[in-house]
Amino acid sequence: NAGVTQTPKFRVLKTGQSMTLLCAQDMNHEYMYWYRQDPGMGLRLIHYSVGEGTTAKGEVPDGYNVSRLKKQNFLLGLESAAPSQTSVYFCASSTLAGVFPYEQYFGPGTRLTVT
Amino acid sequence: AQKITQTQPGMFVQEKEAVTLDCTYDTSDQSYGLFWYKQPSSGEMIFLIYQGSYDEQNATEGRYSLNFQKARKSANLVISASQLGDSAMYFCAMREGGTGRRALTFGSGTRLQVQP
Image (tube, rainbow over all chains, first blue to last red; front, side):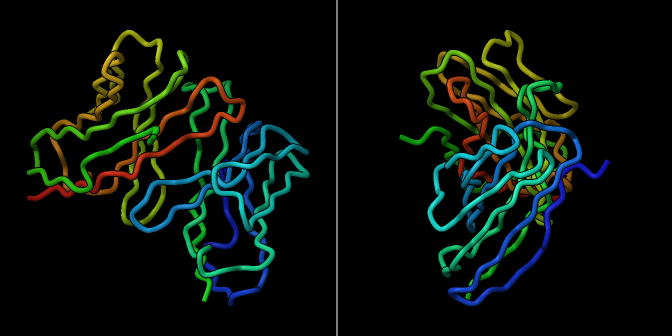
């Protein structure tokens, strides 16, 4: 039981390049999320999904796209990376049917630098 | 308006002493949940404690307790008998019941440093 895993752990991009971050969870959770954490700040919600095939925008969605083709996977795409997207990206998942309602289980994070 | 406010950017505490980390929140929902997470220097997010808005008793988990004052909209984290390993960033977060997404809104965090 790996929980929530993220690929890759680190990445350096040049401005204008594209990339996809992969999140996978093996807990059969309905809800999945992508957050970003900038230095000295808390996490902010980029996009989320309440089930397979559905996605929605969070607080800071500009410059990102997401897809959830399978229940266990949630992909975050950057089509044209900008230096302002330099951040640590966390994926999380949750379910109602847990000890604490909608407790979020976090992945280890992906550190992305855009030069 | 900020939904989660943590007014202490940094705190120092002596080993074995207790420390309180402040958190106030703002919501119009009747049903909500409050979480505290620890983020050590390695970067992972570690769940510590949860308080539901309808819970009548303050939550406790080992050395962690949550001082929940609903009328004041505060949810302070109390760490008893601090240990050197408690040095980390601590984030207060809220899940509001009125939104379908069930996402968390985070505060800006408090950096706790435990001194020997």
